[in-house]
Amino acid sequence: MKERVLVIGSAGQLGTELVTSLRDIYGESEVMASDIRNPENMNGPFTQLDILDKAAFGRLIQSFKPTQIYHLAALLSGTAEKNPKLGWTLNMDGLFHVLDAAKENDFIKKVYWPSSIAVFGSNTPRQNTPQNCVMDPNTIYGITKLAGERYCEYYFEKYGVDVRSLRYPGLIGYKSMPGGGTTDYAVSIYHEALKTGKYTCFLNEYTYLPMAYMPDALRATLELMHTDASNVKVRSSYNLAGISFSPKEITAAIQQTLPDFEISYEPDFRQAIADSWPQSIDDSVAMNDWGWNLEYDLNKMSVDMLDNLTQMYQTS
Ligand code: SER
Image (cartoon, rainbow, N blue to C red; front, top):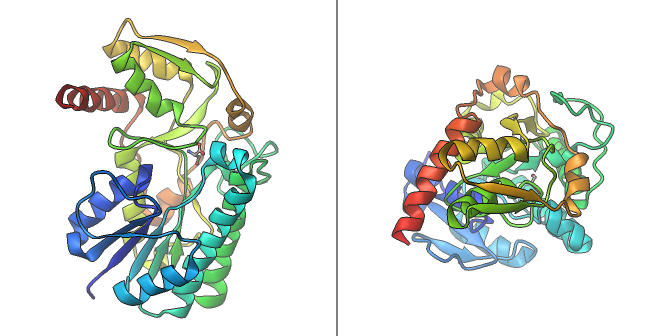
């Protein structure tokens, strides 16, 4: 069967990279990028779309007839705290529009929707957080992701929608910038290390959070989407561990390449969000169900980030 893939939220941190990977697999003309914003440097098919505009989304579905939808549009943790109403509306109604489209149109065979470590909360075990445990998120973002997970499982169970999901840790990459998240410092820190040799971190030095390097996150996403449906036993969302480190540890990793790099700390409202999230994640269920394995550790990621960003700044 010829695959046609629609990516919603294609201009975001993950979408930017995922569209490139999907076009390598399926061909440029078979992957439609869409976002509320026009992307700066994107080639290939693009449609401007506000996923809250259900009629416009319906028209796009009927004209492009995707066999797969990657629905990535959302407000992240920091931004949703500042605009809770929009956080709820965008994150939930956007998902409903996509799940309903898949329920109503047989040509849509698979849906991908990202969840997050933000589904966990202050009564969740913070070390090696298991797949199934207490989940009591206290951010708007986390509440929408947990509710979204329940809806995904519900649409699979009741309507047979083949929806797949990962609980991403913070995502780190050099090709795109995150926007409005609590884990964003771990991207900015590399840019500032190269540009100014200094960085002021909005989390304190001992804040451990799980993170993943983009090549690992992309591979996990595509492996989950490409595995046989019978292997996907979790229809809410899979834990994905990534690498756990603190600002102090990422600083030490950067200093191996840039010994003069300096960090200072000015925690803001995102400290409380980080303190409610796990420090490390158990992703053995993903390993067992569809063979997930991590490739990058903190040092390997840091060397690769600094190499690529150095080249990027030299050529820009
Ligand atoms: N990276 C996200 C955030 O910080 C977590 O999923 O909001």
